[in-house]
Length: 171
Image 1 (tube, rainbow, N blue to C red):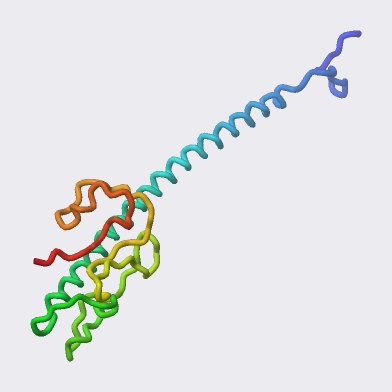
Image 2 (tube, rainbow, N blue to C red; image 1 turned 90 degrees about the horizontal axis):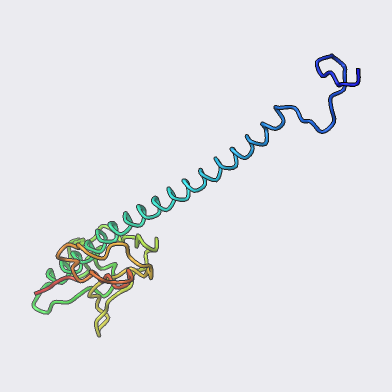
């Protein structure tokens, strides 16, 4: 009886030999690590796609809001009483035109800059402080660089949002 009989109950097992199920656990652990790594890569890719989609949405909002400012500045200029036309001196004048006795609004509110999230805008001003146009204060690089509408054709090839200046085309 010098040979080890592992089938008998209570008989000690051979030293150095591991049961089958213990070796299988190591493979499961490696498989789990690979699964976690693959999921991490997939989540990183999804995050990048989500970030790009969010930035495109903000660009579209900037184009809309800038267009609203452009239209409001143009209407303010065109609705000047008398012969001497002028541009607004403050963005708040677009909310309620002080030159008329009745309430005239060209904007409902001062919009937030979608790129910075703040209410502060860059202003294109004249020598008398009048506001000719607005632009975002964001120094980020735009995703959209071509295929703009006619009103935004000047934005093609621009490298920063600060270069997207919204001014009326007055004739």
